Length: 320
Image (cartoon, rainbow, N blue to C red; front, side, top):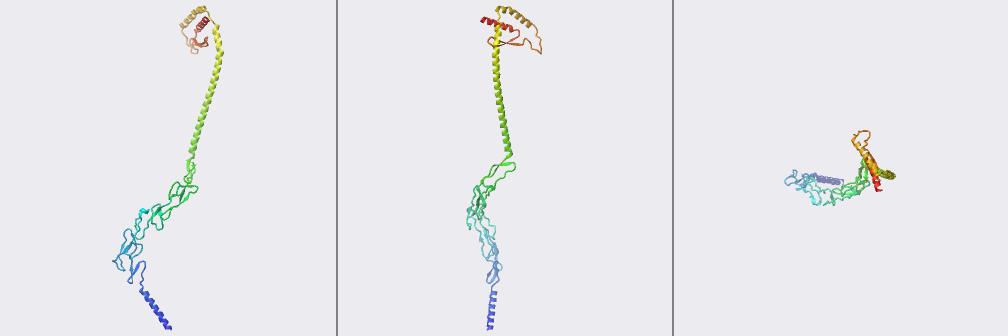
């Protein structure tokens, strides 16, 4: 019994050994089995022709827009995918012959599905909303409302909320920012300086106007008072001057008797040579003011006063 068991075990071991010896030791990544032999494959970026032998195959490079990523014994390379620009894909130049190229969406577009058969535009964020996550080839843009202290004034798929501008030294905020507008800064010193100058000019103009008005008002009042005083004085003086003229009437005979004397005195006066005196004015050039019967002023030279007074008195006599 024991002998039978030993014989069966030995037969099984021999069968396993024969089976192991029948399988060739081929590398599945770089070799393939042919007629019980391990044959070599062509490397990535190439394809195998029919002219080679098992251990020395003939390989050729892939043509343009073709690729081969692994070792192969296939007679042809694989075609690169076509990226249609009408579907918003970039125009791709397939430079690599060892890797498959992927079609990429244009800037501002993303794949409409996982298969990426076409590209669609990114979502645009309106003013007051900025980008939280910028869109790329596979994902759309995500927007968010601008927080306090930030703003966005444009419609964009890649614009983020910006911080309000901080005014520098010497500037102040003229208008505060909002979620769609920035702070507006204005120079402090220039504004205040212009304001002070303007107020100063206005004050000076007002003071000048007040002074001129007050001065004009004072002059008018003084002129009125002066005119009133002068009119009162004239009313008091005029009756006295008229009486003086009427008190000294002369008869025609007296006037005739005195006329030659006046003429003689005048001739003597004309015959003499006047002596110039720088300190005192000449008697001939001095004038006297005489009021007529009607109260009019008459200016006469010295030496002719008596003649005019007599003539007026004579006229008064005739009229009487």
